Image (cartoon, rainbow, N blue to C red; front, side):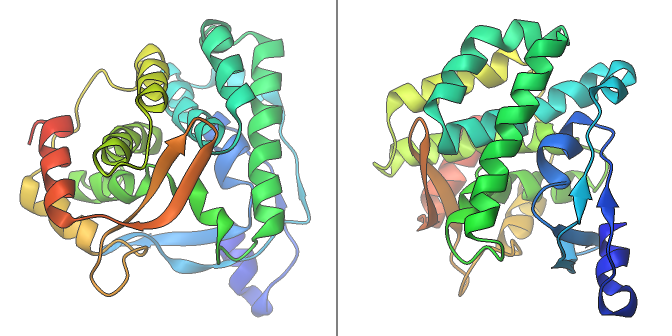
Length: 251
């Protein structure tokens, strides 16, 4: 709908009404509108902000468990890259969130939306800070493409992408063991690391090379500096990337 609104008559007004947790905390916010192409995710699109977003937690009562858990990857992501206090809150309240306790869901959505909306307001066209929201997405999008679009849930792919990015943060000297341990514990408790994606090595590497964040053929990642802080545009040695992929994904 957003892409159609951005394209029709060079842009018309539209309203977002997300009905999944993932849409409430991520895709409905920020104005990114796009469609997938055979070559990859979100390759044709525009930045076109909605005039309003209406989120109703009642929709989540019928959301499948797997879809609900998938969204927890994006919630964990925004907390890790921007708000240590939110990470602490998630560590304490994750069980309540998984049980769909309404006050817990409301607080999680409120905080995740506030973080993303704040970042987007400062950098609407992703020329700088907004890139931190791509944490876990370099490998995540590559996994989705290598597996076949639609076969791997976005949140599951991002969770494994975060695991790879966390390891790269440590290996490159950019991150802290505490941040990586905390991330792993949250993703594991949320049930997002139960099954490794089944992809071919060659397909995954080709997908990584086509990532839209790559520049001049170099692989660039968002790396976790510490809990609540991330660096974007980090060029990482391809050999280190490949070794980390092999270890984390058992390729």
